[in-house]
Image 1 (cartoon, rainbow, N blue to C red):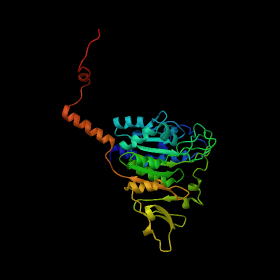
Image 2: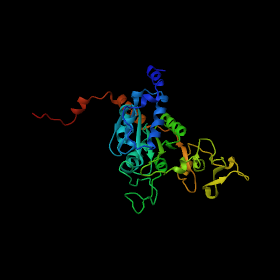
Image 3: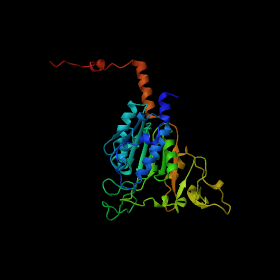
Length: 340
């Protein structure tokens, strides 16, 4: 273990708390996410000066101010562009993008899908509260049909994005979902994302208690959440419910359906989660209330060459063929002239 790694092992959550006052509304779900990220970072064995958090615009995008690392507070939707440039020029850094459902999927939508398909080695934390919070309560690309907001007084008529399905459609190599207040689950998903080589995308369902309070109450209320969450793991059957007595199986026509265990139905009849199966991942991404519980966990995790490794290979091949570059020679090549 290097000296830097040994030093990183000794870091604590407090080392990642900045001196800035956290300016989110009291009760905002962002506080819980910040706390879990600050708890995980010291465990990763990465020197603090090698972390970089990059954001766009929105409540979530204040995040870089609140972690004691390097960071950029970018412009709306453009965090992936900044992260791409940084990752390509400084491959030793651990690069994180913090974004919201509006920042990532509206003005930043094109940037996100291309980052996912390229498989750049970065981690994306997308906070989804299904509303524009910073601009005071307009509907967002993930707001449900019929959502009444300041910008849709008669109800939204837009079909919302499913962020997980969008990421899978872009052929992302690591796709996951968690919930702001599910501390242990969120920590484990973040830990796995950081250890993944390639673009990791985590949708974090997050409560905006000012403009969209209770959007995910069925998933967070302790009395009902077990019946409304499907917490899945690789290699295990899809079981849920307060008494672990419900599951998901393939019914007629190869369509997933909810069944109750018992009366001849056992866990052997249920779908077993496979993180490497993109078809199953898409099945899960489309499960939503009221017909299904909301799935949380790692939908898809596969290995594929990263964009940065491909570029590095091309540069190495060019150097082997043509030698080290010479900027002066390049500028003086071809048609040149002197202005006197």
